[in-house]
Length: 253
Image 1: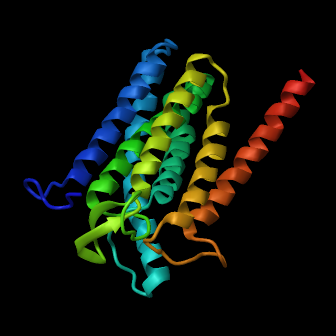
Image 2 (image 1 turned 120 degrees about the vertical axis):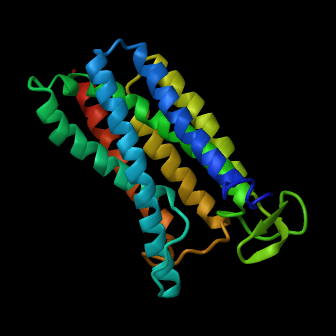
């Protein structure tokens, strides 16, 4: 892969990250436009999404610094972690939704259309994450174990700048995320209203499993679990709780 600078300090990793962010915004605009939200509501959620992306990137770096501290005992800024970005981005979104939105929409009109955004958000997150994982592949981070041949590919990684063959867990995850994006888009088009549940259960399960094949060790929050696995367990638990209440509501109806 090619982790080197291309021009002005920009790498392929940066380019794919930018593509992912742009695609997330494009998908939001394209999908939600079909639901014909009032323009003020549509733009409010778009701006809120941009703010969530910015704070999410900051949070992703902060969480990675915490993981670096867990692993080495040194609090060092460097790299980002997906779950950190999701947590801080979601917190920003909720704060903006209720505090800023509560003042900007006196009749709380924006909450009337929240379910549309709630269902499209997993599509946006997934497509952005898929391109981000391709960026990880080019940078040589988030890789699997070293191997002599197939299914490994040649990479230069932080711990081995000369390069070797590693299992491309980034590529496998990108493929999974593109497939999940297609599934979530189908559910959104059919108005199934299960996207968030499907996302939490699907990605939580995938991330828990793929962590066993990752070789970029990041310390542990709980015994026998990586930080990502611990958060994956929480994501799956939340998904199961939401599924339980959805089934209960459907049976009651």
